Image 1: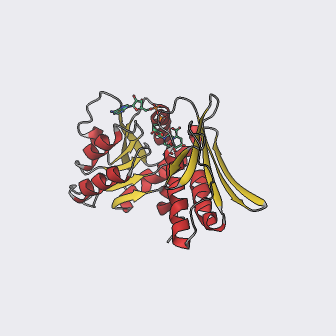
Image 2: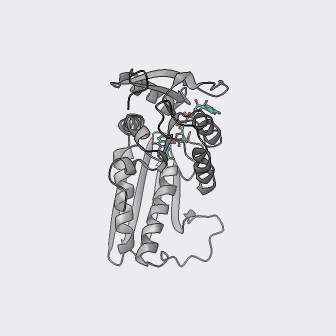
Image 3: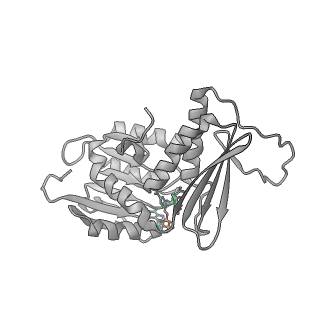
Length: 261
Ligand SMILES: NC(=O)C1=CN([C@@H]2O[C@H](COP(=O)(O)OP(=O)(O)OC[C@H]3O[C@@H](n4cnc5c(N)ncnc54)[C@H](O)[C@@H]3O)[C@@H](O)[C@H]2O)C=CC1
Ligand SMILES: O=C(O)C1=N[C@H](C(=O)O)C[C@H](O)C1
């Protein structure tokens, strides 16, 4: 995509003072054909978004829907990494997109909501969904830095959802679990029927294990982001390609040819 002035893609970043937003600003400034035109954070007037063609949104779950709606209402494409997009929020966003004005090039607006931009994490989710129907038991353990405000992680919620969908399509039953007494919630959360456990530990960045068990065997699929640099190639790919994907796309796998048919 080039903008109507042919000067490459103008990019705005919301949540620009945060851990991810600051990293995204650096990555955009270093990327060929992208120009950083606006940095926005809590309390800033988003206004015309600095004239951006594409906005990258990494703020907090409670703020992201309004920020994205602001962009969409102005015909600006959005790449969203912020978590918290449950079905209700996604449905509202679909309606907003249906009523949105066209982008500066006249094309319909595109929004990419991606729970995780790291290629390994996307592959982990894909592999977990592929494996899920072959195993009696599946559990997800996500491990993050203790400054994270939401649990379970967006990646874990998405993984559980993909696993549950794959199992349902294959006619696999619920995961085995004889627990009837768990007053402290030691068995974790249930997301789409899949147990999910959240660890918060100083020193960690973003990590996840999917454990799949059968009689006499276990398959472990693990991904580790040791540095937020791991998310940047995916974010930049999203910025470059979001205009070619009108409407709402959930998951970068759809841009990479990795999505299940
Ligand atoms: N999709 C992905 O690959 C990844 C997603 N994330 C998600 O991105 C989000 C941000 O994560 P971090 O950067 O670690 O958090 P952070 O707390 O470091 O940064 C959030 C930033 O948003 C700002 N903010 C708060 N309210 C705002 C508002 N109303 N408008 C604009 N800015 C506002 C804060 O001041 C802060 O600078 C989280 O939901 C996290 O789970 C994080 C890493 C990777
Ligand atoms: O808050 C984080 O750090 C991360 N958030 C995303 C999530 O909740 O899945 C992506 C990654 O795990 C890092």
